[in-house]
Image (cartoon, rainbow, N blue to C red; front, side, top):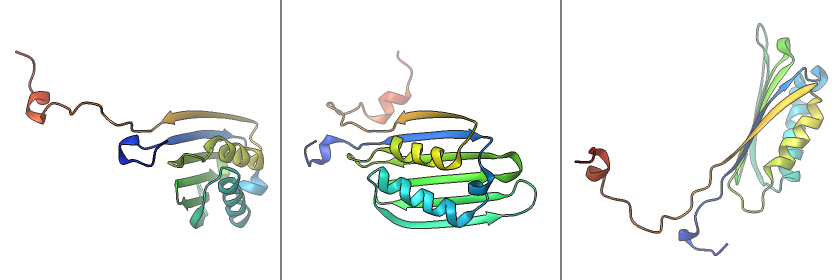
Length: 140
């Protein structure tokens, strides 16, 4: 893709729900942090910062957020429900969010999981859009 602002923005977003996950991983904040960093590396993303939190009590679990140069990876677990959500979003042309997502799934070992993909890219508009006032009025 040319190095040109008119070439658009790449946006690749993989997200999913993991059911009946391995609690040895889902409840271990440090281990889950390592898994997320490894996922970023496998997905060809550069980690900028990683933050994590453990929450106790009802609906407690672990949240890990990795800010990557290309966007983010987020994992949230609910230990009581053996449930996790995973979100991998990248604007990197060479990044592979599927590889990162798959690594996290392998680590959490869910019995069942679902995933979705959204293309969040923006491609340049070839013609200028109509002025806003023309767009907001119903046709005559």
